[in-house]
Structures are given as structure tokens and as C-alpha cells.
Image 1 (tube, rainbow, N blue to C red):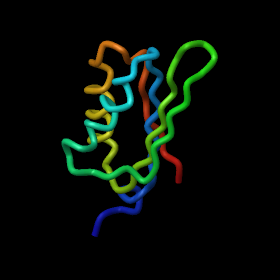
Image 2 (spheres, helix red, strand yellow):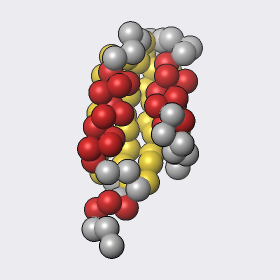
Image 3 (cartoon, rainbow, N blue to C red):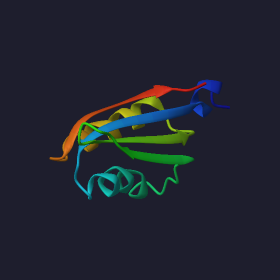
Length: 86
């Protein structure tokens, strides 16, 4: 049986330039792995940046770190990181 930490909820936080494709670039990383996020929130801030939060459940830390690395390769992404919620 997996350790309880493997079933913790994680949140991916992304800051992107005001690019309409930024949300789909973030979500496609989960789609490629056949993962449905528990929640996705995107908010356009007054500083012309897009803030995206993606909550996922059941991913290992290493797998999420790889996803963040891929997201950071996109040209419109300013920053991305994840943290545990539980």
C-alpha cells in the first residue's frame, strides 16, 4: 500500500503573461497523462498577468515536478511551482 503522502492534494501555481493559450498549455500537461484536475482557477490580475491554480490529487512529488518543468518551457509562462495542501 502506498504511503498517505502519495494521496495528498497538491496545488500547482502558475503565473503567465496575458496570453489566451496559457491556460490550455498548463492543462494539456495533465491531459497528456490522462489526469483530470480536481479544480482549475484562472484569474487575470491588474498587473496584466494571468494567475492559474490547478488542484490535483494522487500525483507523486516527482511527477508533479516534471510537469512544472515542462510548463516552465512554454514561452508565456513567468513562473510555476507546486505545494501540498494536506
